Length: 404
Image (tube, rainbow, N blue to C red):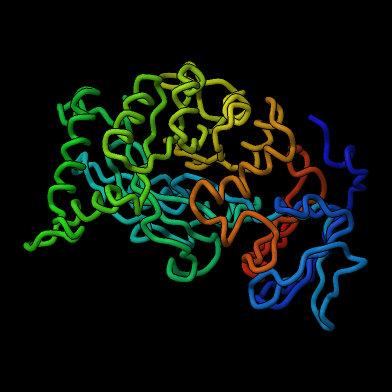
């Protein structure tokens, strides 16, 4: 992989920060500013943040910094990183029953479970990924049930979920294949999985009258959740690795005219034409996942194959049943770059492309005027393993000053 430093003549250096970390108007100056927006890469650039929002981005020579503004410097500046799908905040670092809230196995069909009700903003894994540049997580319930719950878009700062929340109920999470098969028989086969999903969507559609309002009677939270899917207000995020499960997901989306996002999709390269024709976004399985079982036909080059075919792609941390319970999207992007993506494409999968995938590109994902002041700072090429994240800013607040 070609280093950012080689391609743009970057000299390594240390990030200069004071010991204070609090919300204020700040400016970040970088030898390279990777905006991931229309301005591309700015050599010797500046990003100005006021009241938590970006108010100016451009070359240092022509971008005014308001008097008295605290200025931070770093060799490389990028937008804050985005984890397009994971369970961080629900899967705690202790790996004990009391901090594992990613799955409730009481029922195979629970679309009404809300991620924000289980998210712990003070879990140490949240801090860990924040210190490694992740400023936004699209997190929620994990695999193990046919429909396991809802996701939420959350900033990795704040003492309460209310302070951190960007959007609640962003997607409804489902799982096809082995991880959602129940040995007790509900569902016990792939055919039963699809029949249960169809029935739930039919029930939701039937419960809505001709005016699009729910028929009178007692509220049904399961129906209400699926009605949002039927009305295309909420995407259905289906984890499907096997080609047969990917095709089942695509058929379901076409049958009910719902918005589908494919998650994982390890064998998407085996049904590439069908995935392209469907127009779906794919949140590619983490490259560092153990490639066995349903991932036995996975390829390190999946992100490249899909992007080359015109499929919208973002990277994710996913879910792992073993500690530390979450991966790091920065490292996933590094692996993707080592396996065919250009540096710009790889960084895009964890910034602007990830923001588009979760429907939040109006606020995050690139360094543009009006967007949230979320910044990651590095002492070298972000996609090199030896590089450190040296500072993180979320909405104008310096939330990390440690070198990771």
